[in-house]
Image (cartoon, rainbow over all chains, first blue to last red; front, side):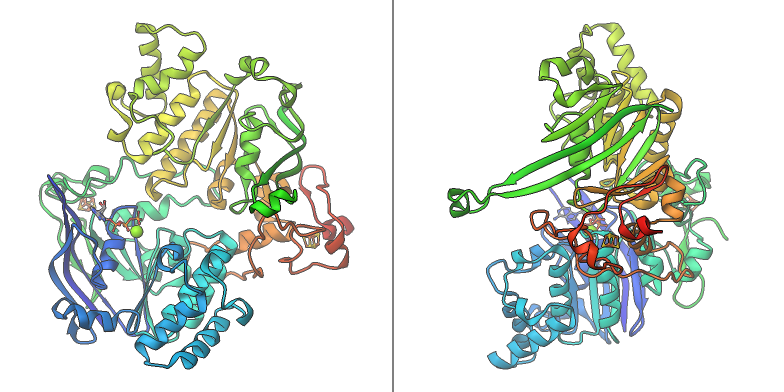
Length: 312
Length: 324
Ligand SMILES: Nc1ncnc2c1ncn2[C@@H]1O[C@H](COP(=O)(O)OP(=O)(O)OP(=O)(O)O)[C@@H](O)[C@H]1O
Ligand code: SF4
Ligand code: SF4
Ligand SMILES: [Mg+2]
């Protein structure tokens, strides 16, 4: 359904080129859910914004293909893209306040989705909006409130309502629960998985607990690249890339109080990447060739892989 | 172990400026950020304080250090009530009580070198700017895992994790007995969080410093703490040994909080206790047990009366536990 191939998105600033996304490839089947995990700044958001063709300046998609339902999105006109966004591909961001209009009633904003993409008239769009808001847990009595009258969790419900309104084929959710409290986070994740029905989902998060409970596949990103792409259960039971292994081991285990496993050092700067493996300076398995020559992509079967000199 | 610092019936109230009319008619909103809490922290102990945003965790930490003046109640530090002291009377105590902030980006002065940032508290307490001071700062840097060669660099030249280490070195400079660490890992990368947790634990062991470790990350709190206190809307609802609270939570809120944690294991399909709604705005404090509008077990009494924290080593504020 979605096939991303060798996607490259770079930011061009005065003196440097930031390779935020540097050759990312993955497939996502219809109805499946994919988590993209990785540290802050590793390119998760830029990757998802690229799929929507919403990369902010000075960023540019400089290479690759994004095949959505047989069509390369990078070949479409801006007008064609606009018809797609919100209808066939929907998005949910971390902070709903930045994507909701503070001056419009919540019902009006959700109704807009119906009038733009389904050509419903005003009354029909409003009725549809109220119905879908109720579905996400916002009572009709609150539908005409403004966003600031809602709590963070309720705003995120509004965003989910707008996102699922047109039964999109793909929903991209960028850290949808990071700003929320744990108990509310659980409500929102449940709601999302319940209501997305047959939509495919790309969920960006840095919380491995959410990955494990809410997604079928995982792409682990490090410094602008996917270093491991696997079914979630396989990745958790047997991580193959040393970075994935380190991440999983560094989660505090309530049954153990021995020293926590830690990955030493810091992630590299995306404007000054080493010639070989970007993880080499922190990798406990690094060999001399790791820092000199880019590691090979090791295909596990048709779609899954990891990128490392180690053959595990 | 004896109590190093003890809170007795501490209250911190804020008034929230509402609209002009409300103010003219004296209807200010009163926020009970910390509402009558009592607990102690023992010498060399790490007490984890968890709770959702707005529950009063940071206010508690700041009040303990007298960075905020409490509305009422006592803060006994080795038996001396800090709440009753004036700013000048507090000064000698300040060096024993330090804080580490959440945001390693905004909490360091960008125009000062790392060396000056770490030396500042020492200078404030009478140290002289000389070779020895520089040596001492270099030692502190080493202690927290920073390269002493970088002493003359500026904060922006460091990563988030390294900046958090700078903040820790500064807090350690005066060899305090107690440090409030307010969400010290929240702004850090996943792989760097473990580094900071290990460092804090090591400092506790090596230097015998007591910590109030404030975090919403229950797993990290369980890992690092000796005891855990759970806060909900200004009140401590459960307090006990870390393993006890995590493995056998007694308060319905703690139970929900722990069961809401997504397990990092795709095979674990846990039975989640679902809570209705969200924490109310702190100025619409529900009567009775603050948790009753969301509590799956609430009964009549909960809507009008407030349960108090009771129990010896593992204490709980809930009518269900009282009747057990
Ligand atoms: N508008 C911009 N101008 C310049 N660089 C940018 C811009 N937006 C993103 N970048 C850079 O692109 C890289 C990837 O950023 P991205 O936002 O995708 O990270 P992320 O993985 O989503 O991180 P986080 O977990 O913090 O959200 C970073 O180095 C970032 O600094
Ligand atoms: S290529 Fe080498 S340095 Fe990179 S992850 Fe694999 S073993 Fe480690
Ligand atoms: S006192 Fe009542 S409402 Fe409060 S937590 Fe206990 S059972 Fe629930
Ligand atoms: Mg992001």
